[in-house]
Image (cartoon, rainbow, N blue to C red):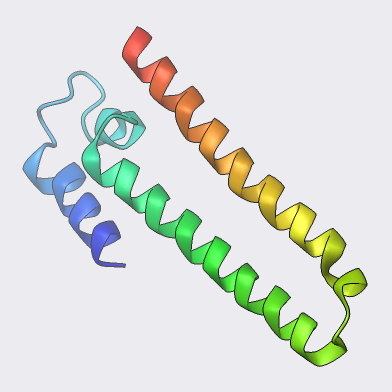
Length: 96
């Protein structure tokens, strides 16, 4: 939440005339900004930790690995997708 507030302040107040001709839209579209990277990192970690806790609670409740095999596979693929997506965005940002 704090990163979003800082990012909004930077985009609408501090750097509004820096990204010409787009202004704030150019700032919010720039994936190389530190606030964009950290915001996505925090959201990704929050999602992975929350989902991991739910999977653990399912294991504690059911006491069976068979119940949590599919959720673990989906959880790992979600983490992998976030990593690949971040690397793809980074590669696209450096080629511009």
